[in-house]
Image (cartoon, rainbow, N blue to C red):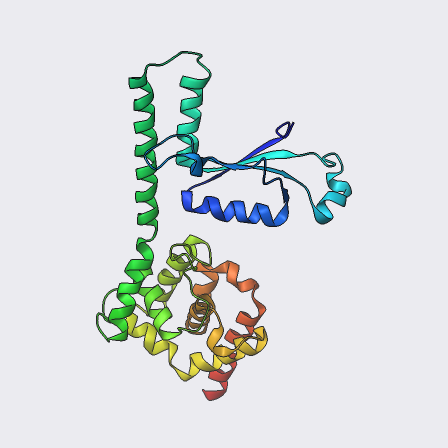
Length: 278
């Protein structure tokens, strides 16, 4: 038996199922002959149960680890599906499969229609998920053309401005175009902190990121972090800017970043240079 032990992984979006499956395949030994992708089993005009079932067991160091000794060479099943796919599966399983009732074709068609509707909803949510990238790209195009630079700074305008100002650095937005390379609240807190330091428009972001004071601090940060100056992250750039203008604002709005010693060194260096100049 391959399903004496079972695990289910649910993702918010269907597009993330492949990411999870790929990660599991990298970490575990997979029995390809017994595993099945129920999504591909559906015909082009069919709607119904959608889930990836992997038959797996531990491999490499985990298989030899005392921590997992109880598992031994046991095979287990991992089901991976989105929350929409899970909702349909659970309801269909409860109402149809477990009931033992032989439903007429008309009722089964209604279940298939529901599955199709959920699939459509999932695609729409996935499309909406990509909207932040679309909005940021539109602002980026405007900013490169020196348009709309005096509008009120918000998260999208902030991401676009930092991205245009420092295009080679690690972006806030991940490669998928919707996920931040930081907690979702971080960019919002950056914007609020910048406003409190007097940086309230994209034009002011560009101006501040080009000052000698910022560039010297960025150089210090890059040296301490051992990364090329042009490649320091956009988050680090924002934090440096906030810190050299008002360090207490950084402490209040982005306290987690203060664990970065390179950031503290850059801010301290900027304060020392300012004191010496004064």
